Image 1 (cartoon, rainbow, N blue to C red):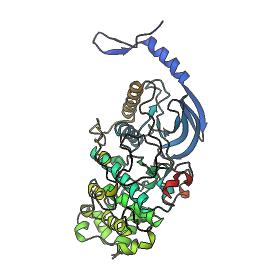
Image 2 (cartoon, rainbow, N blue to C red):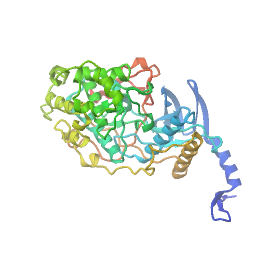
Image 3 (cartoon, one colour):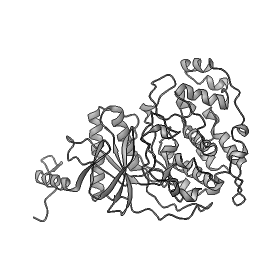
Amino acid sequence: MDSVPGEWRNGEGDYVEADVNFAMNKNKREKEFYSLDVGDSTFTVLKRYQNLRPIGSGAQGIVCSAYDQILERNVAIKKLSRPFQNQTHAKRAYRELVLMKCVNHKNIIGLLNVFTPQKSLEEFQDVYLVMELMDANLCQVIQMELDHERLSYLLYQMLCGIKHLHAAGIIHRDLKPSNIVVKSDCTLKILDFGLARTAATGLLMTPYVVTRYYRAPEVILGMGYQANVDVWSVGCIVAEMIRGSVLFPGTDHIDQWNKVIEQLGTPSQDFLMKLNQSVRTYVENRPRYAGYSFEKLFPDVLFPADSDHNKLKASQARDLLSKMLVIDASKRISVDEALQHPYINVWYDPAEVEAPPPKIPDKQLDEREHTVEDWKELIYKEVSEWEEWTKNGVIRGQPPPLGDPPQPTSSSSSANDVSSMSTEPTDPSSDPTMTSETDSSLDSHTSLGALACCR
């Protein structure tokens, strides 16, 4: 038999899968996969993926590097950890998958493949996401001495990626060094899509949080927020790259707020009046701090030498930081304004900054509330649609080859790139940006030598 009809219409005109086709697909599917133990977990993956090696694990999943025999390149495979154990995990898994499928920008993670080894909704329990394998994350880059060109170029790329997410109505709210990865040519990608709204926590709410050092005051204090909530996080990350240590290393949400005001000073009464009563009472009862000037927080000695070639100076970087690290979001610089700042705009490329926004088909993505079984069915539908769409599992081609270190105004090609999965260290204490409450991003497996151009 050369072929078997895959579907037929019932009396009402609906498509129905033929039993014979299902049986053939089941046998074929079992031959496409193989299983192996990775740490405490079993990976059951397509045979195209070989040489699996664990590179980390976190609350949201276990990640392995692998060689993709079809794309002929190394990739990262993330197995979502127990995505259906509760509504929060299931909603986050659905949100992550839907957003990854929609977003396509060179500075944001993108999917290469998604699959499940299970053959039906009734059996469905595992989701695997495949992404490009990057060289390192910013946790490692922070320990390196960067010149102004590389520092400002990395910052420019962060802002481009964030602007693209914002264009689709996606506000990250949880940017941190472990969520941002780089390649040896200093290209940068944002990994995670941040917190679902149901996961946001306020100062006096649930103590369970992920790494909080980069959380904006409005998130810490349970306030409303706008797009520049992510600008605060970028400011904290850049400050850490300059200082070599975490700027606001709080031990919990309350201590996090204390660290902020100790350095930046107690905010004005106008800001305090925006807080709800219980939070305002707490904040007003804290000691008042005058804070330090940005010249004292970030003296010239911490910066690389001024750049004669690109006219990038420590004073410019410090000025940008002073506009990003503003407690009152209404007075904080926007992403668009930051992209036009003299420390950043030497790299400005309209193809990167003004790329078409991703089209998110599910407009109620964050507001959706379902049972675990409903989330499971929605995720299975997304995975099945991907498999049907790609057929052979290939959706994007090879990225362009690694280029020379970046140069201003012609920073890199605007061609669509593919993105990757980084990983969080198995032992969070091994990373100064991590706590025992870390979330889904994981530290890279490679050495700092992979970032030679960023030294």
